[in-house]
Image (cartoon, rainbow, N blue to C red):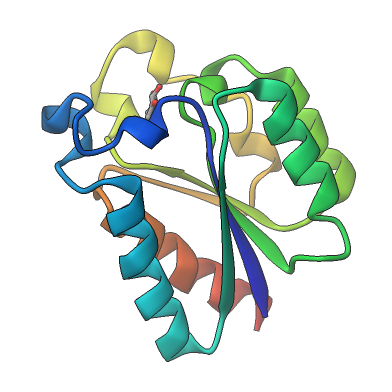
Length: 143
Ligand code: DQA
């Protein structure tokens, strides 16, 4: 089983960016933790991050036929991007929406997700563990 972990804008700044919301772990720390978890599950992971919407759309398109699933933290594009929603819809690679923070407990504009309706599920509010929970959920769904 091969899963792509795709991260959107500003997540390259994890560790220094608003730690009260996003914790102190860097994206590299999260990658390390998730790779260790995936190894115990027999899942192969690839990681990608981009600050650009079009690059994320291309990453999702290129996942077709290569990955069994996607764990996606689209970051701020979650709340705005019909292009990312349409890409998930088009490729039909089962995708889990992930957020470190509980977006529903924050500003109102974060309560809307453009992508939730085309994802197999959504996890938010557990910090770095949101990715771990998504991995377990997606593995179970795909097995
Ligand atoms: C986020 C939540 C988004 O609202 C925000 O724009 C982010 C990170 C999270 O992981 O909590 O950049 O996706």
